[in-house]
Structure formats: structure tokens, C-alpha cells
Amino acid sequence: QSALTQPPSASGSPGQSVTISCTGTSSDVGGYYYVSWYQKHPGKAPKIMIYEVNKRPSGVPDRFSGSKSGNTASLTVSGLQAEDEADYYCSSYAGSNNWVFGGGTKLTVL
Amino acid sequence: QLHLQESGPGLLKPSETLSLTCSISGDSISSDYHWGWVRQPPGKGLEWIGAIYYSGSPYYSPSLRSRVTIYVDTSKNHFSLELSSVTAADTAVYYCARVYCSSSCYLDHWGQGTLVTVSS
Image 1: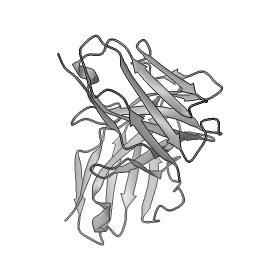
Image 2 (image 1 turned 180 degrees about the horizontal axis):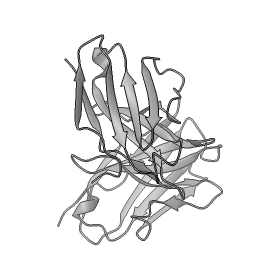
Image 3 (image 1 turned 120 degrees about the vertical axis):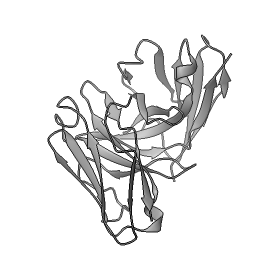
Image 4 (image 1 turned 90 degrees about the horizontal axis):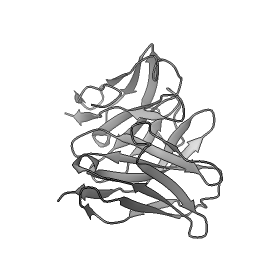
């Protein structure tokens, strides 16, 4: 059982928008503005997509955006493209130099 | 270009100690980053193990703290993970990663991961 709860799957057609949720508690997601999102393609290393809830590292398309409300963080992928099909994991700081992850969401581009 | 490569035994017996090394190329372990480990059991999500700054004390997940050790070897530009008394529940792909910390921390570069299986 992962500390953060994500839907197992999400899907959308090319060009559409999809939002993936990540629910934690007041001890992690709700308590800090330190949520990050990672993209993982099969057989590849995970890649940081969003950090500090809504910041994008250099090189990440602005089609990826993040937000947070209470104990739930969200990743939105706009203008879906075939290459966005991957697993997405959220992560949150949980205090005392500890981080927690979600169980992952498989995003399918229809 | 930063490259991280995990290495170590892929098969262990219950009660043995897991030992993995992450070799760093394209950066120095003494740079202003932390270095960490994450694992992913088959079919499950990611799990934070812990991390270390080259000149600081390591910090670990509370759930693994009693069994885990992370340390650096600056002369070899690598860092290592030891997990004692392994069981089948420790079977996972283990990733090493560079941890960027400013106001918060996130893992900005990851290794490809190495599968460790615990089986008698």
C-alpha cells in the first residue's frame, strides 16, 4: 500500500487534457508545498516532470502542469501526445527528511 | 552528461545483506547534491529508501531505518546501499538518483535501475 493514492489508470485522446490526482494527508501533501511528479516509460529511468507542486524543470513541455488543493495534488497533461503514454508517480515531502510516493498511474493515449 | 549506474548481486537468499553501488559519471559526488536510493517492488509503486550528502549524515525512510545504511566513497565517486536481513518483500528494482535540494528536494537524475530478487 503506497503512502499516496493515485488512480491506477487514466486515458485520453491525442490533443485532449488529462488530470491525474494524488491524495495524501495533512502530514505530507497537505502539509508542504513539496509535491513532485515523475514520468516513467517502460524500461527507462524515471524523469522529473514537476517539482514544488507546479514548477517545471528545464526541458519539460509546458503541456505539463501541477496544482494542489488541500491533501490532493494533481498533474494535468494538456494537448496529449503519443509520447506522453507512460506511468506517472507523485511524491511528497513527509517531514523529517522523509519522502513518500504514490502507487503510480498508467496514462494511455487512445 | 550525468550518468548513474547501479551494480550489485541480482539474487539473494533470505536473511542476507543486499549491497548495491551507484557509480557516478559526469558529476562529482562531492558536488552540491544529495544522492539517494528508491525501489520499486514488482507491480507496485515507488518507495523512498534514503539519501546522503557527501559530507553529512544519511537520512532514511522510517520504515527501513533499522536495516538500511547509505554511505559514500569520494575516492571512487560512488555511493552505496546496504539493506540487512532481506526477505522476499525486499525484491524490487532498486534505483539510485541524484537529489537536488533547494527549498525542497527532488530526484533530478536517475539510474536505469537494477532488479534484486530475494529467494531461497
